[in-house]
Length: 87
Image 1: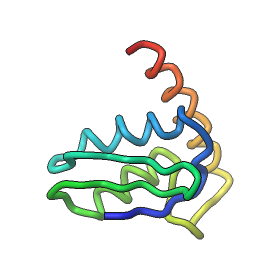
Image 2: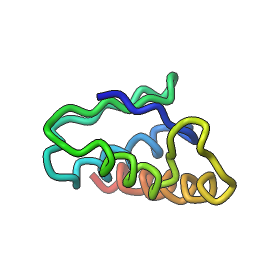
Image 3: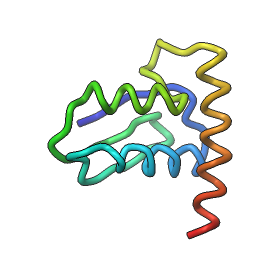
Image 4: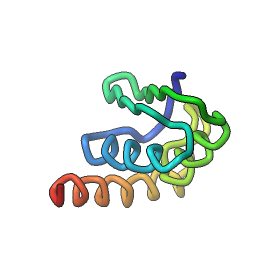
């Protein structure tokens, strides 16, 4: 399933998204296409759970952006960069 999102800027963002979505039951595979602000998710899951998680990380549906969500995405990005260096 394809999810078009806001605030996707870099590898840190992509890493946070992958880590966050893999926590959801039924998610088998997560691919992030930065150039298209797109997240591809495979598995047997509830799409609303995916949207809720993405929104909570600061990556809402395209057209549903706010300053607060942009700020949350910056924090998620930094965490994603940190997490990628730990592994």
